[in-house]
Amino acid sequence: MPKINLDEDETLSEPIEIVIEGKTFTVEKITDKKFKKVAELTSVAEQFALLTGAKLSTVQNLNLMKIAKAIQYIIQAIVGSVGTGIERVLIKKEAEDEETEAKND
Image (tube, rainbow, N blue to C red; front, top):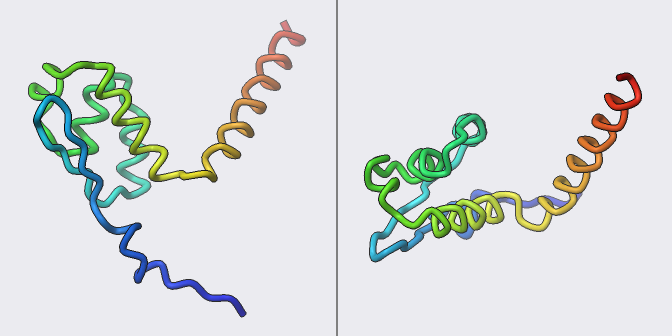
């Protein structure tokens, strides 16, 4: 039977370091609970602050486009190439739901 020990894969446990405007931010272990909290937030600055443990006041003074790009990078690191398939399924489901709602109106 095939077996993989992901505890030995250091690429999955190393922190992600992101440099924005000369400041280094570190993303440590991301749990499902933390990821859900991030998804509930509507502010990109708040999301980034939660992921990195940085002070919100520090993050709010950074270029928002760079913060958004950093979050995109972090999410890509989490979901990898699997994310592409998941995103397609979610987008398709959302379109189907909207189509059903339109028919019911």
